[in-house]
Length: 335
Ligand code: ATP
Ligand code: MG
Image 1 (cartoon, helix red, strand yellow):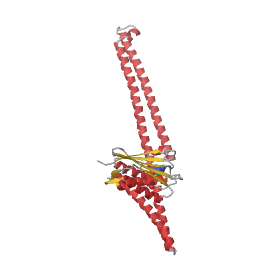
Image 2: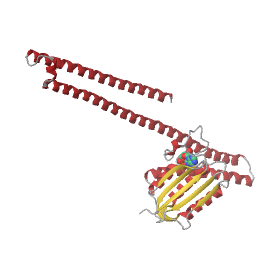
Image 3: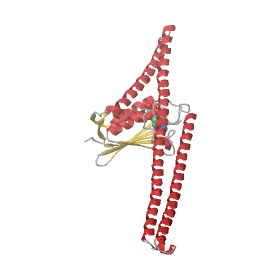
Image 4: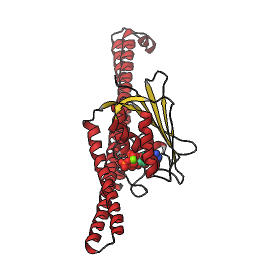
């Protein structure tokens, strides 16, 4: 980081020097142009006086020769001025673009570092737990009830590993080769099933689901939509508060051309500066040192890619008094 600050300081000094040098050269050119005009007009006047064409300064100032000369040097003044301005503007744009690219590089290096740290942690902890369970089985004679308990824990850890690997594969797939496999889905029932499943898993969380009376039918990829809903709802649980309430709202327009899906929670919320970035691969709010939750930063990237592949959009806003709302808009069929 120190090195970055030093580099930026150095490049700022170089840029400031170049701008000052440019201003100085423009000033010199300007004054040289004025001098040249002065000497040129003086010479012309002397020649005209010597030839007896004019007698004094006033007569010289009225001549065409003087007027043309004055116009020519004025044009050169303007040229110097505009060329300096163009140079300065080009330089500012160039510096701005270089800075932008440089910042992007630093950000993506930071993201890669974050990802490596979190993925290593995510992979290591279930492996360590499973290893511990197996070692316990080898070293100790356990009662069936304990064997059962430990086996269940190990199974949960393998599920975690499986989810992680699936996320990594899905992220790679949505980036290059994802084409939704479309089928008619009763979205009302589909979401209700997912919410019931999550309600059973997180009994301390209050799930709520509002939907139109008529079933809403969409043409979509079942696996993709499952990933979208589960990722958003799991996030709402993961970044929830003491008493997490998660409300899912499904709406359809009158002609049934579009649907809107809203996932609202009352959790920790997302700072404005991070809202645009959370859909990027590996992006997680905060840093490895300050974060309390586990994750890879792939969930919302996958969600966004799947929604885009269905020609939909996703937006994030603040909930009141606190929390986050994710709103998805989708066309009901893909024709
Ligand atoms: P995983 O890949 O396991 O889902 P993750 O949850 O960290 O990891 P994303 O789901 O992509 O990754 O979310 C990116 C970041 O956005 C999260 O790290 C979190 O900081 C923030 N975030 C996402 N959903 C919410 C939410 N409902 N409330 C507050 N913050 C959220
Ligand atoms: Mg997530």
